[in-house]
Length: 187
Image 1: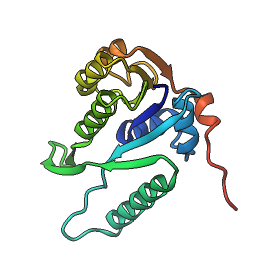
Image 2: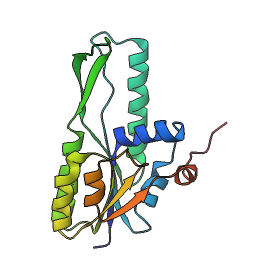
Image 3: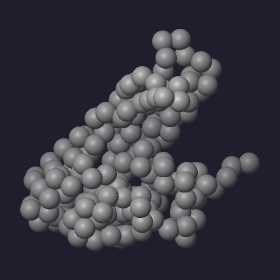
């Protein structure tokens, strides 16, 4: 089976784009095809959650929510793309008075999808865009099923060393890669 599934941790991808590349708007179809490395793409999955909404949302909260919903809708319109949503949970405030939020369910969804596609023999390669140590057990299961795990990662320090070591292949997202995927600006 030579098909590839691309698993994108949206929170991780968003952080990479913001921190290292100036928060560009990229063409996710091009990104998924690049991550697939020229092989046939079975599907690309994007894992994220909607932003927090207070009981009486501010205009900024409403705008953030609307923007994220539009983004998810745009991704879902891309052929062979699917958005899978976890939840954002409010955990109180920190010592600095800022709210603390925790994303719940996205890593579990990603791990389940990864393991199911591998154990059912649907893919030969899993391209994983994440840096999260929590995914190491799922990667081990997938490798035991004979699937090649390609870690698509940012610069050193943006991923778990254990996840990097567990992967079969490693491909860094560089400024040149991002530049080749920029969305064209509409006038």
